Amino acid sequence: MRDEKDYDDIPGTFVFDADRSREGYHLNQFCISLRTQKARDAMKADPEDYMSRFPMTEDQKQAIRDRAWNRLLELGGNIYYTSKLAAFDGITFQDLAAMMTGVSRDEYRDMMLHGGRPIEGNRSKSEWEKK
Amino acid sequence: MARITAGVGCSHVPAIGVAMDTGITEQPYWKPLFDGFTKSREWMKENKPDVIFLVYNDHCTAFDASCIPTFALGCAAEFTPADEGWGPRPVPVVKGHQKLASHIAQSVILDEFDLTIMNEMEVDHGLTVPMSVMFGEHGVDDEWPCLVVPLAVNVVQYPAPTGRRCYNLGKAIRRAIDSYPEDLNVMIFGTGGMSHQLQAERAGLINPEWDKRFLDYMATDPEAAANITHLEYLRETGSEGIEMVMWLVMRGALDEKVTEVHRHYHVPASNTAVGHIILENHA
Image 1 (tube, rainbow over the protein chains, first blue to last red):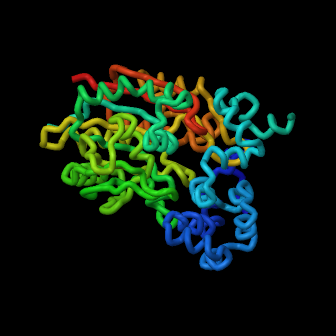
Image 2 (cartoon, rainbow over the protein chains, first blue to last red):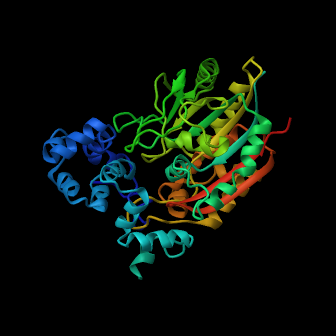
Image 3 (cartoon, each protein chain N blue to C red):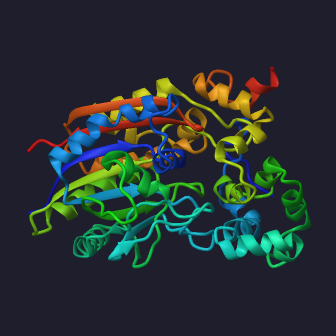
């Protein structure tokens, strides 16, 4: 259980605080391990065996198998860690962002070229509920 | 005596490094961004720092989740560019100024800022991208034109240090450098930001009005910037926009009144608003 936080009202955002860090510890350590070529080779050769080296929950392992990028954040992952798994798949930060926001790569890139997602209407959850 | 002559604020997006490393900076997507650094590179050549005190954050590269220091000072002789998952950047090894770093560590800790000392540390794009944009292309076999004392700040796990804490740490760093006996021209870089969110459904958030006001504060009203709360950074500038607290370390190390010599703001670099400012101390 998490206590209520003043930033919980920000929509579409997982603030990586100490509670999430605790829940996601082994998931994040799994992700950062992929920083070395040796680990990437082992993960490629046998993903289940490689994942079993980290005491992750079954939900976390399933989210890795599914490459469920937002679910990974919900289960305590942090974007700088999960991006290492994305890099393992050859996915850039920008394409990863497109996947997490549920739009195509071109649509996301186009949004960024036109100034990005505006702050108006994106400050609090109540603004998203009206949509 | 050593003296801090200027401060530089600068974003550190990994894609900027990739653009320089792959030689595509003249492409229409990148050109307007890099044009804003032409003047900066000339200015760097004219003002030749001996040492850059470079405030940045590690992006879960050198530090994994097992150890999360709030402020980690690089005291090693050199810092190797890290493999962030796609091979290390082809840039020179970063050379430290060990004597100055130890002096700063001692002075700042006795000044009641409890730093972590790093005698070995790899550095990621957070440090090498600002070096590249300010000095231009340098290959693996080249040398950077000056020494670097890195300060890695935790902005990944919430809470990052407050803006006020960073600002006051900057003042302590100023006192430390001012009391170092060797004649050195030291610049201080605050890196990261500006508005950006890399994660979840709100990814891609950009807030140019807010960013521009922050640049104004850097130039003329650092006290106002130091008062910005974490909640405001998260809500108004995106979850990763909180990196901007690192600019306050830089600003704290400068005079209260500074001269703005250059400013640049550009959207986008990948997912991020790129901001840049050069501030000179008065002699």
